[in-house]
Length: 57
Image 1 (tube, helix red, strand yellow):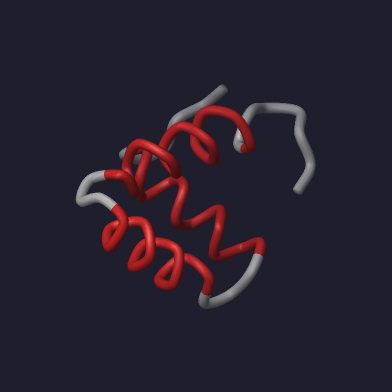
Image 2 (cartoon, helix red, strand yellow):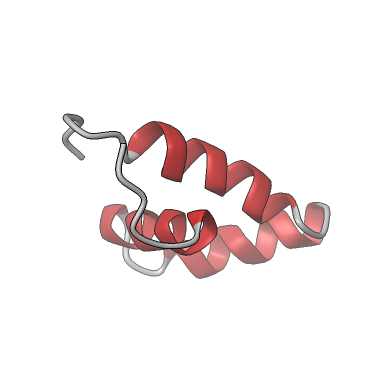
């Protein structure tokens, strides 16, 4: 796994690639649920899991 940026920024960029416009919607909804949850959920799920070397989108 290669990190190129802060995990949240990396996760939002990956989500944007998967579905344009989704990153802003998801970030808004997660922050409304619990402030800071965006970094926890997306930073882990997208930056640490989905953006691993060898996985295709």
